[in-house]
Length: 518
Image (cartoon, rainbow, N blue to C red; front, side):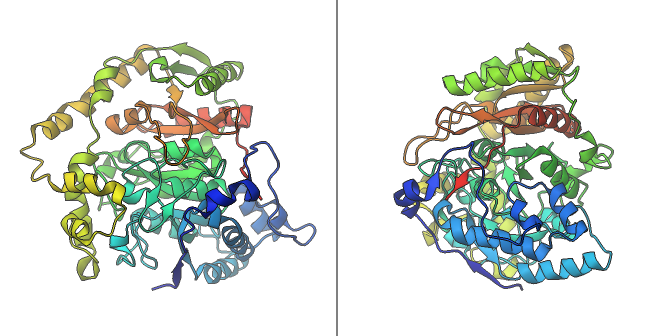
């Protein structure tokens, strides 16, 4: 087992210090964390892409060891106020040194060789605890890596640490009994989105190059939107969920949270593929390109047809203004943008999430996979322990009260009809209008002030209800500097198309701006 340590919880100190420690100006240039040797690439690490970092390491202008130390220094300096990281791997520097030796000897494992990454703390890691943010699972070290964690290591990635999440991935606020409240680096008074809010806040703050999150009903795309990032919810079956603490396996996926489309494409290359331990991934056979980076085309919007789903816009004038500008920008970049209506939209989004039904059964199966080392054996034991955030108590109890799915008519109706209706309706509007993608705001509300209600809207549910892929890309800022995201949704296994469209939009608008940490 590796060496690791838990970061102490910062809790409310961030709010007290927010005015003096942080500026929420999104447009200002990021500050260099440390003075560096003149000419060394280390002064350019903030906001650098994986391509840039790899190029610098190949040239000898940067080492993985320097990169790890840079990110660890930033976590040490700034994360007390953002509170995004739960666990740090103390072996990360030693791993970086080993990867530097391999590179010097001419061995490069893959595109992530020597690149520090952050995992949401529901991804199994054999050398660090995996907790879902819950005190009930504190110190629980799984017997092996999740499939996606393993693929990362095979590509040479360094698992720098584990990020906070909304406990058991239940919501959009990112608060947990183990990790406390994570804060939005663009405004420390506000939520970072969720449930992968810790990963998103960490990547936005340049605490790692990229991260992995999970998405059951918006939990990759919402925090990506709130933190001015790119988040991809892959097609159901593109990437294995084996070794990820489940919320509802009918809807669960794991995927990249990154500062750029190109970084997200590199992560997708690493994690996509068939895994016998997750049978749904058999559907991906024949649909995975040699590399998703082939679709990074600046003219990707030229002659594309984009359908705007106005019915998924909310009532926030700043978000709607940002989306109207995004439509104009896509047209200027060569796209034909038309407004469309999704058949049966109201009925599709009226269905509930399956997390209310499947969680107990999927979680109990996961706990059984931990064997004798499992700190608790069931959801019932978690409830009895009292080791969870009080805000999720009623949800835990309600989900534990589910006795059977086979005899639940509501569940059977959802399983039988929801996905079929969603797929048929989305394919209908995409095909009849000859569209490459649908677009709408990732979320119809801006990040809310902590302690108030966080609006969500129904847009994030189209992807998990259909199994189709969706990508959130930065689309600008509100007047006060809060990020706005635009979601693009495509057909099954149309990730190449979404990457092409999003990259073209990204390069034509350049909306990504780092939060300014002081």
